[in-house]
Length: 374
Image 1: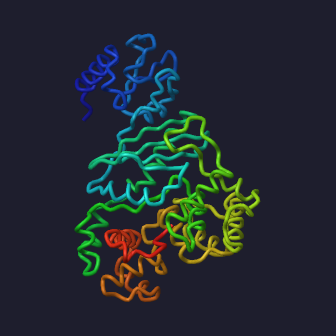
Image 2: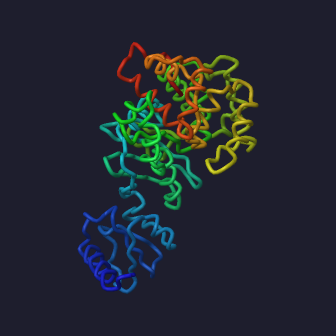
Image 3: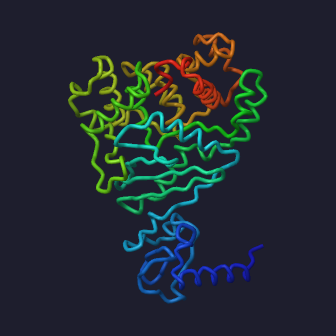
């Protein structure tokens, strides 16, 4: 039952925080002013509104959903946001995964914080993500505050925050082969992406090269065709180029073999034209078929895109060198057909199994192949 007394008390405490301009509540409390249609941080230096015109919200998204727009003076859309996580949460493992694949100019990891640019429906932006044990702190800077809900949802997808880690760990933790890995690092997530098209392009760039090589190629592509940010953030200076720009570009300066230039051009054209739609809520089988029909797109690329862009929890990279090496270190036949047969028992969480297998190689550099994954 709704407690009217408690609600009134909460509103009164919220008003006291606003009246005191208490910056300690920034990021946890937002006030919408009905007379102006604007929402602010508690610490905003604007003229104090009348009490009867103020509404209180616990998130910027809630204030936006109620029809308020962000104050241009205190920029509440740029205040830190507390993204909730389901325990257990291996945030450090996510950070390490993203750091190894970071494209200079587009993303970086500094002092335990992941930063990157965002291409959103109404404009560009940047995000900082700082994982903790029970939440992820998010700081966003957006060209258009109306992009806040989309930006937060993409961050949740990138960090796989909406999965059920207990269900995954329960399913894999008792496996004779993977059990020790899972129990040793519970809550490991399957990293997603903030942009499916970008992820697919990066997967093609990563074919047959090391992670460092793929990052160099991505930086080269971004420098040539990316969009500079109006407000750079540290080493994050550009947005990754959209598929349409790559579809129209001259690929001769990309530093890629002819076959991969051709694959990238066809992929970019298919993405830009809508022939391939990488929608997590769409038809995964159709997306796989259309990707596989493009020149230069093989099973590894299809499954990698399915795992990270389509968010398919059962995607499995049977031909991945990292998977092969990890299985061989565990005493199994790591060749693709054997790996495929073995992985049947890990359904429907084969993508999580891949993450544990890749991670098992991290502590043994001599066992890590030149190309683990894109």
